[in-house]
Image (cartoon, rainbow, N blue to C red):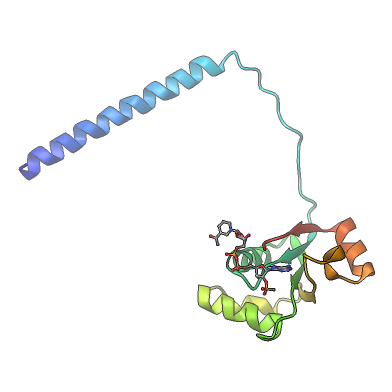
Amino acid sequence: MPPADALCSLCNSNSESYDQMHHMEHLIKQYSRSVPYTPGPHRTRPPTSSVLLTGSTGNVGSDFLALLLSDPNVTRIYALNRHSPDGPAPMRVAAQFRTKGLDVSALNSKKLVFIEGDTAKHELGLESNLYSEVSNKMAILIIS
Ligand SMILES: NC(=O)c1ccc[n+]([C@@H]2O[C@H](COP(=O)([O-])OP(=O)(O)OC[C@H]3O[C@@H](n4cnc5c(N)ncnc54)[C@H](OP(=O)(O)O)[C@@H]3O)[C@@H](O)[C@H]2O)c1
């Protein structure tokens, strides 16, 4: 197909999908008018919060850790990691950050506290004072 014809058919197919999109929007407006709107419960996060994060040495958990470190509403992050022969958790997390191109310097944040535990153990393998604090006050993210 010559280039001009190819362009023309592309324009036509785009205008077709544009029409379909408008038709869909019209249908949504038409049929949602009679659907009553009930707002859900208003959920707001407290202005400051503490988070217990597991899995920060891993792929998904390290991304979460980077997000939490950059969130000014999060004032304390307890990063729970298992004991490992591969080295201390801060070192393993830093290696993961480097591998993923995340900001390693953010790990120097004072709001980050590394703790040793295990989600497979009773009360996350934490000593009872810390476990009480965690279960009463914190948001918990388990990424394992
Ligand atoms: N990666 C993805 O694209 C993807 C997509 C959808 C769902 N998921 C799910 O998300 C979860 C995490 O995936 P991932 O790719 O980040 O895995 P990963 O890189 O293997 O990381 C797993 C993390 O969990 C920690 N962990 C495992 N068992 C634990 C325990 N008993 N107590 C405390 N920490 C424990 C590991 O820490 P240590 O070994 O250092 O202790 C590690 O930091 C998995 O359940 C996976 O199925 C992942």
